[in-house]
Picture 1 (cartoon, one colour):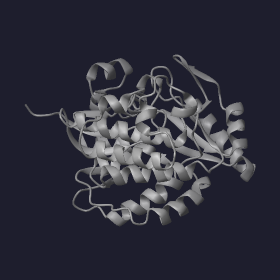
Picture 2: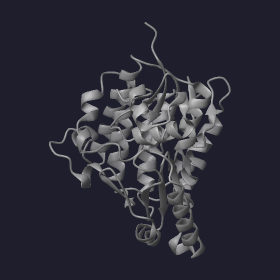
Picture 3: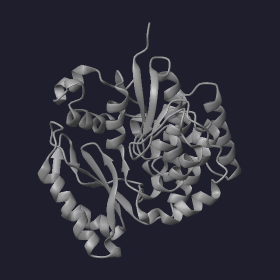
Picture 4: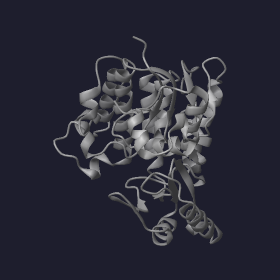
Length: 335
């Protein structure tokens, strides 16, 4: 039986929650990914740190431990890669993309890096990013039916512009374009101002805006030092041609026949770190360029389900224009 075609979408920070405790242990199986996890655990032991396997296998979810930047990044990385191995058995994955941290996972998922060097990339970036002062705020610009709310969009733009005009102390910018959600990032002073001045909205059980725990001002110029250090520390990262199409954070496609490994490395350590990550463009490219049977959201968790759904409805992809029809269509898969 022919497998349904899929564009694989790898999640970013915030996808490993208390409901995902033990996800890596439950999902991983013998092979290169398990070998990379063993290397990760060995390295952590050598640094007198708790192993990732122990953190994933903890009896209780502890925010201070599991949301720590380095721990969270590696838990999500290994969880996603392990899940992808199961997904490949049921889907023909024709392209891969990722949201923010998910870009790093998309590289080994598409064959650009092996699992161990992918872990090295994730661990290095997470360590460097811990030194940055600032944070992220999540805001929505859609209503409860996942339809665009122009009034909210204008209010978000106005708030960001006003803070930028006030000077460097309240610097903020668009960090991630996440379907009908927007992630804003900036200095500590800017985060306080954003939480004060952005419109207060409740969608279902979630109230916006709110600060994302354990997140730095990713994808902004505040990460300039991280980018410079990473370019030195990871200059020898053995990047290869992808084995399937790879969609970056601008929505550009890197094909198995024409991708430039040097360009992929440069993008990963520079533009991807410093410029807005447009996950909306990733999903739009996935739909328009590849027309897959499903948009496949990898675990851990289901954090990409809503943002992907927002983009599907905005595009009217496959004639889907409302939330109920989307849920009935099966076009977004979380297996």
